[in-house]
Length: 84
Image: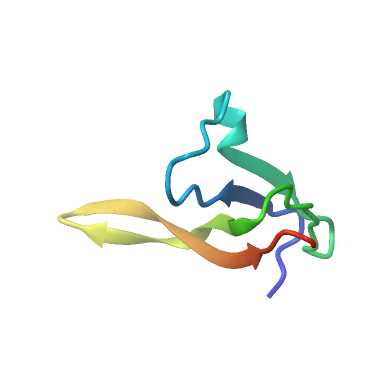
């Protein structure tokens, strides 16, 4: 089910570690969905891209007498190729 105004984390899978990002914002970027839960992102490089939407559940789990928040998430993986 779409989540209005969800924050979506975007990351490039740097599989071989050959790409050295100049700063942390190049590692994880965050885009925000609109009122319908729709977001857009233009992938600037070929390869695998992960899109993760995370939220906190409206319930908590108990463990050894303590309650802990529950994170709910979904990840979409997209593979892009160079245009030729």
